[in-house]
Each structure stands twice: as structure tokens, then as C-alpha cells.
Image (cartoon, rainbow, N blue to C red; front, side, top):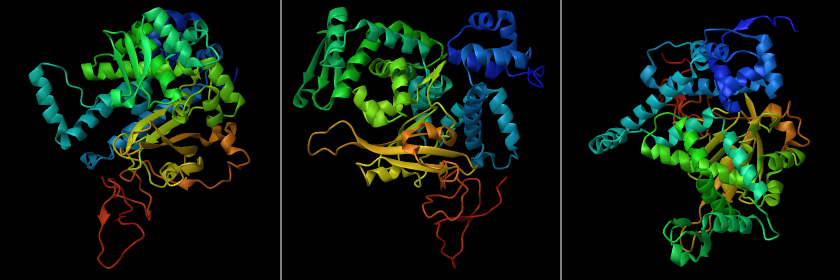
Length: 480
């Protein structure tokens, strides 16, 4: 036993997060660790310590990297708190960073509560929340300030991994016979034979602006001809998710606690989408292929008849004990810089109240639509990441409507980059990283020619006699 193995640690919230990520009850994890359920309960309430022996047994029994599990959550929670308390609202409060780290580690639930409260506050400042709240009040319903952010929080809390849905998707693939024509045919047969749902691909002049519609009365699933092959299979798998995993989805939703109707519906749709991706790319087969192919996204897309974005999204979900993949993060932006999708199984500190850094090459993909770009990026705290990015078009739009374009970025911490084919031949220790920020309002880097606004933690300096590289000059001292 290593030195210090008898040290006692009070890490209840961290222990509980690990148990929940494994999908285990207190009784189940107690059996695996050889301790009583009541002791597990006391551990999670920080009323009993966790010895190093118990932590080692936890790591060995469930093949866990405890450092990764703890650091990913704590870094993300700390980043959320740091963003919130950088607001000028708190300028007069001298809050040490260590206190924020302590709060992130010991009270993750408080972090989520503060984040939701701050999100509601920012919307109220724009005059949107009060109007919506009054309308909801008149209707006698509960009001959720931002259901999209609420669901993103729930996905992050589960590390974008839902074991029940993974098992259900693998069972589905074991049961269906995928013919030479492909997965679409097999899923259509399953819908018809088991659920009496007929699939029809319809002309765009019939579907108009709708890409998918389920006609409950006629028991027909209608899919627009504009949807490509991968998208059609996904939509059939999505319908099967609702038809066959409704109870499982509802059980996951119920664990989230009180949700208003909008958030509940959005969560159900999100989980059905998760099931659809898992059915197209079953966990074990997909993970094995990803490892064997060094995470070559294009080859994975070809092998599983999936799109580039679908594969990138799926790669962020590989968190199964004993078969973990690289802890990726994924971002989707449009050419105006609006973030429409973000997922992370790692530590990347996404901003929840702003855009992205223009120095990140995810934005350059719109100028080079047929190229996959790679980049090493470095945040102000010195943390380095490796990322790839490519533009995608989805789905096709009839003329003369604008063709929708998005940029997809997939990345990981630099310590994992050697497992990626895109880093082959690179000296990852010596390559210079592009200095970026989370976004302009939180970035304190000076002399950035791409800066869109000054950092909210610094005082703006205005000088009529000088024009700098950056449009904004600011003080070096952090305001209190």
C-alpha cells in the first residue's frame, strides 16, 4: 500500500457523482466495495470519510480514473463560478479563487443553483424573463428561465453518458437483422412489424419546411427527401426510441427533479436523440472502431453510415466503465459565431453567456469548407487542447433558400492528443499553441486584434492620442 494510504478524505459530493455516473444505487456500490449501504449514505453526506483503500478499491472494481472523473467536474464547476463572479455585479466583492474552487468541489449542487439563478438574472436584464414569467403566471404554470441551458446542465451532470439508453440501443441492434441495403431498411421493418408504423420518404413540395413528421392517426413516419441517408436512419431510430424506450426515458427525466413542461419535453427529445445515435453507432462496436482507427472521424462516418457531426457528437459520449474513449468536447457554431450545440466529457470551460474566441480555427472552416483543420489552443491559465474543425452542410435547402452551414469542432486535452490520427508526427510538447480566450468578455489577454469587447474584470482605458492594435485598452489590475 502506498505511503499515506490511511489518510481520511471527506469527498461525499465527488463520491456521489461517481456512483451516479456508473448508474449504481447505494446498495449496489456498497456490495462492490464490501461496505454497508448505510456507510455509503454517510460518505455521500460527508458524515464519514473515504479512506484511500476504498478509493483504490473503487478504481479497481469499476476501472475508474478517479483523477479524471474528479478533475473534469471540478474544473467545469470552477469555470462556471468564475464566469458568474466576474460580472460587474460582484465587482465590490473580493472573492479569492480558492474559495470558488472549494465551493466547486464540496457543493456542486450550489454551483448549479447559482448558474441557473445567474442565467435568469441575465435574461431579466434583457427584459425577456419578466414578460415570460408574467405570462406563465397567468397560465398558472411553473416558469423555467432557460430550458435549453437547464437541459445542457443535466447532460453535463451525467457527463453526456446514459448507460440505460446504451444498453437498450445495443439490444435493439442485436435483435434486428441489418440487410445489405443498410440500417434504414432494418429500422423501417422494425417500426412496421413491431409498432405498425409505416415509413415514407416524401417530396419536398409535400413536406415543405418539415423534415420529419409522425402522423399518429395514420401510423406513418414521414421523412422529407431533403434528408440524407444518415439522417433518415437517425430519424427512424429516434422514432424507435420513443416507441420502445419511453419508460426508460421517463425514468431518467424523473431523476432530474422538478422541470416545467417545456424543459421536460426538451429533455425527452434530447434523450431520444441520444438513443438514436447509440442505435446507429452501438457502443462496443463504435468504441472498438474508434480506438483501432485512431479516432479518424471520416472513416468512422463511412463505416457506420453516419455524418461528420453525428460521429463527433457520439465521440463525446464514450464514458462506459472498462471501455472509455478519449474525453472529447464538441462545439457547433454558425458563421455568425452563435453556439447552437456544445457537449463535453472533459474539462473544456465553455462559456454559457457569450460566444467563442475568433482566434479558434473553428471559424476559419467557413473559408475552407472542404478542409479539416487542426490546431493546438492554449487558454490564459496555460491549459492546452488539441482540436479539429470542419464545416458541414445540413440539410439541403431548396433554391433560393440559403444553404445552412455550421462549423463543427472536436477537441481534447493535449495529454490525450497522441491517440488521435490528426496529431501523428506532431511534437505535442513543443508545438506552440494559439492563445485564445473563453470569450472576449472573460479573456484578459492584451493586444488582441480580434477583441470585440473589453473584459468585464478590467477598467476600460480611453486615450484620444493613441490607437492600439486592439480596439480596447484596459487596466492591468483586476477590479474589485
